Image (cartoon, one colour):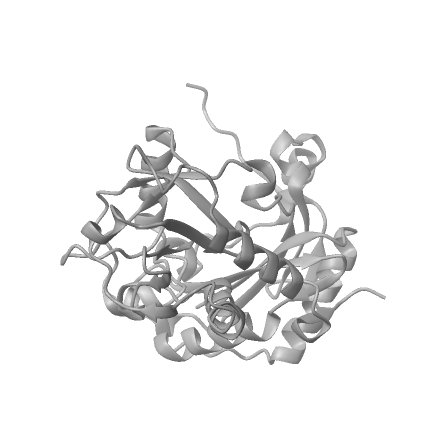
Length: 326
């Protein structure tokens, strides 16, 4: 092991000039209120080590997509961010209008009309204890990165889902979109290690909860779309919108007999006609294998096709879009 040298600002500038790992290609631009500036150099997309988000998980985030220069469902994401800040007593000193303006500047600086946007609000830098009052002011970061294709575009045969052994978050922490995602990380690790696309969690009573970063639902043999009660899950903006579309379009058409938020014990999953994943990145995804067995006939089903069609149309609805490019 070599002895570390003294590292200066000039050394850091030299490091930035030569450090170009392949994964940086997907990092477009970032704003930080720490500098009140935007950078397109991934080496500068950093967070202070004394920020409470780093050493205490004391911060919140939202992720949404920009497609062809417009943000989908922005108000729902910013409303959830505001609610989360109130829940943990974090002062969000930026208005929706300011965050929207800064997001547009970040996207334009990044130069990509299609991007995934991540907003992070931390308690801020200023100490290394658990005391939140040692942070003088919060920190806002807005990051534009590569937008992956929807899951079914890359995997048209559908997704495979396993059963996670990671204990679920408690009610309060499940409902706040904090950066403290260790259980979610462990669920994703289980999925990768098991060779499946997602892992599904269950609460202490054996009722299904959610996937690492997505919501989950089933379609019963009686054609009822059923998702968990909001007690032990993060209420996803995509799922909420899909449920609205299902109630408005598919129930009156007779494609669904109903839409319910209810406890879903694991035994119900064995008899499900379809299983669905909802999320900002995967959109509406059909699950064709659960716990090593086919779901239904092992093919994406009719409810998935209709919901996917409705959601794709909703993604292009001008009333749901916030244009940020000229």
